[in-house]
Image (cartoon, rainbow, N blue to C red; front, side, top):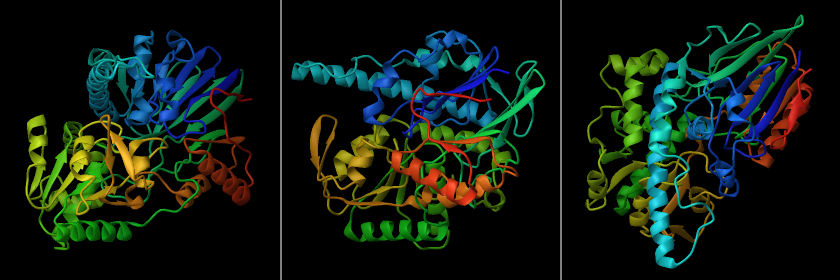
Length: 468
């Protein structure tokens, strides 16, 4: 058996997840993600590292942009195979890709106009990376699979998807390959979720693998528990309301927004915060909420009980879902305090930038981060303590109260990742630590070696491993 694995993304960085698995004549790409860190964004524009036509399958772990966001580019470069994922991932990925294309088209237009005014050229082409038409060209290639149902790709390669507990429809992917009387099992963790999180079920424990790729976003730290998360959210809402400001929350449209609504709904039921107007100002998040409503089979028991008792977090009083641009603009003319949840989660684009412009220089307002902020993103600059930040071409003074709640993260922390790895009954031939910044990957690799004595590697970008 000739088997190799090449690390085409999320190697020594967090975004751009993409791994190429070659098994004899079968070529499989696991994830095809967009780079979001400024220092790596140029990779989005480069030709795909291998011939897109040579890839027969894409196994998609979930619908976050850093895992699916380069699919339109891959298809435009010639990929004609199958994109295999869960039903919820298919629906959410379609929403995500069209929205990403729309934002790229809008940003390219604004950038071109700004550069023309300033008489300069930017570091990237003044064209979108891909268009909405490119995004829609991906749709016909999707093929769905249920959790824990073996899917035969060809005579020698099979795959099984397991619930990753990260976002709705997210999966860990196991590839079983056999050739010349040899068998190998490779597990791609995707993004591992946390236990006891709202809405979705806990991550699945897998028992056997010869090779494992594990994410390490929070491989160097322990995160807050759910009780701390609720307390901090309540404190932020109440203290900001007393000052007369707004609570502006940059949030990922998928899972994070829905989880925020879940916790806010609980705080309202418990009468721990005032019944402020709460805006979900993200058409994509609203569309994703619709997908959640269509797939209760992915929910955990607590979420199902909320629905049965008619206390769904998607319907509470004073919740306003704003789809149109005019509705979005009207939010900033309201008097008094309100909660504004808008995308994107790292402030790299979308409506959140407009709300930051109206609130970031107001001492009475709060900017609350509830997710990971990648290096060089606007969100990372703000949460890192920058006194001034550039938004839409102009410098803005940061006077608002800036805080971060890590307990909302949909990523397992170092202890939860170690616990997940402990579920394997035998040590793998090798563990590859991916999807993390340098300090996180190196620290988590050390922890695994120290605790389990496994053979651990931290792969470099574009490096190739022979899986013998």
